[in-house]
Amino acid sequence: MKKVHATIPLALASSLLVSTGIAADALKPDSEGYIRDWVMLAPIRLPEQEPGGDSLLKEQIKEEAKLRPKPGDRIRVNGKELVWQTVSAPTHHFDFNATLKSANDHSAGFMVTYIVCDKEMPNVTIAVASNDQGRIYFNGVDIYAFTEARPLMLDADKGRVTLKAGVNVIVFKIVNELNSWQGAMRFLDKAGAPITSLQVRLSP
Image (cartoon, rainbow, N blue to C red; front, top):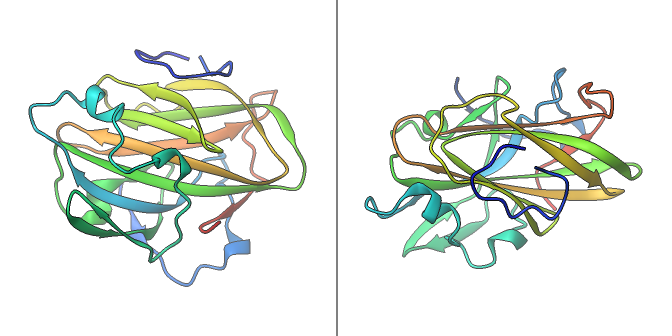
């Protein structure tokens, strides 16, 4: 998995619509395996003079790896109250600026989703894209960080994870330096085919 900074203990080397009233058991990855349903917290303003990669590696929220939000939860960050909101992307990637209806340079945001498996699924490929810097906490473990500015390139980085039986928590943090602010993620099986049978939830 190509990266500039890696905290990976594994082999892990457009527009948005705000949705309401979605039945938790109705959510699935799309036909290509991309996760479209998330709980979002943004924007968190960052110092303009601080490189995006440095911001990515700092905690904007205390113990952010342990985030377990549900829609409507409120949290104060840098003296400002933010609300976790449900977001459903109409395409394979999500777009922070589109759902916020504003441009947000020098900002960080979080996308959280809960992946439910009937049984353990080892050796699954996770494919990640971010614009700009991206970081992933998987079941509370810091597994991935990309610290350079870049445009969105689907499946830019890939690596292996094990989806445990039950609920798997994914915290996807993305820092935007300038202009577009986006991300995408999907799971692939051992043959490289999209995994579409997973259940997606928006609360723990």
